[in-house]
Amino acid sequence: MRFNNHTLSRIFLALVFAIFGLIAEGEESVEGSRHQDIVEHLPDFRSIGDINERKKRFFDYLRPLTETALNEITRERQRLLKISKKKSLTKEDIRWLKRLSKKYRLKDELEHPEDINWDAWLERVDIIPMELILAQAANESAWGTSRFAREGNNLFGQWCYQQGCGLVPARRSEDATHEVAVFKTPADSIRNYLLNINRHQHYRDLRQIRKSIRKQNKPLIAEALALGLLRYSERGERYVESIQKMISINRPLMLGQSVGPS
View 1: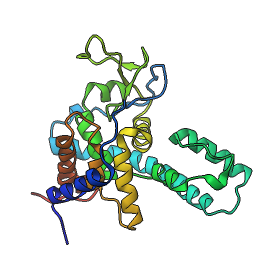
View 2: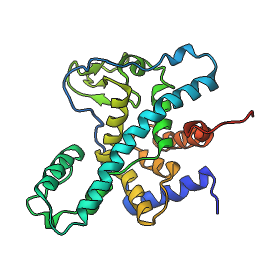
View 3: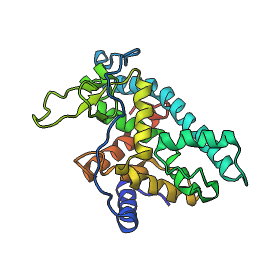
View 4: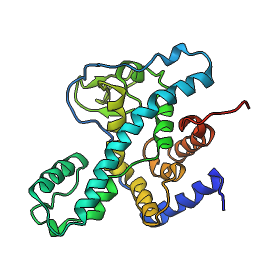
């Protein structure tokens, strides 16, 4: 049976609200207190006049960077799964798990490995569909043409909160202190986005949806996980629907598939 985007949205939105509910609000932020020095800039997507060509170039540029970041998480998850099945942990296992717990802000139960909640760890150490990542990057960065994308390699609107840590938004209110984070490379922006999704309280719903799909041994569906992004934007459900629509329209381009004439 096939569902259109609207039906799929309603089904999973009902699941999210009925089972998991809305989480408390929190602030999305980037760790660090200093402005990063740029070592690699995005291509100049503004110079590409044809919209379809710009979209293709944007996805073609980000796809391999995203694949690399996702492969890193996949390797972490595979190692975590392997360790979770052991009857006893080695010192190297413990050292690696300590680093992982710090990275993903997991409860450190390593003094008593028998008490580790492996499900909680695996809920955070997991991938996100390529299409969802690319759709958010396109949306948040205006296809790589926004000021923050061009000057700071910031593809996803990540904020930081210490003076001088990033770029000050032109329309920031007088009492606000946030800045828009700057990344050394576009790849760093992707990695930070994935880390935010996997550990920030805003996106617990997304992680729960992903966990539910995993338990059913089904492939991760980008449109379904997008329902966990209600807190990513003040637009809420309208934002989610815009991301789902972007995925539906651009999926072949996102996945590098040839697109015939319309």
